[in-house]
Image (tube, rainbow, N blue to C red):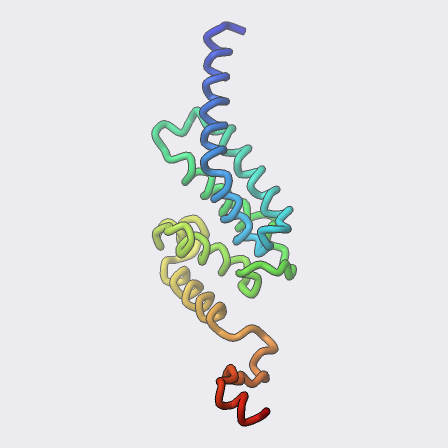
Length: 166
């Protein structure tokens, strides 16, 4: 192996390590939202991120001016959308009430700020369906959690109500 080739590999590895150091936290958070896990317990998100980063590293030399963060994020979404990460289990995360498809769209559109057309292309849906899924998901997130509908909300006691009852 030539010195030139070895030097190129070392540079490539250093560039990728610097990218991971700067982007891994946000990418892990994105993966955690996709898998609907909690930040304290996110083994599926960690595996999803590891696979996405491995794929990004494999194509590192072919990026040619492309944003590596976008490539890694797109790979996360693709792997989640088309992989074993879609199994429906309660994991306790913020987006747990949503279907995997709704989570993908919410994370890409609202958290990552990906354009509607790009989200549509990534998910294989028409833009109108992306919009419909997003509206449905936001409505589900704004609705009270299941089982809370029968509970009556009581106002917090004020000084007067506390004196009157006591």
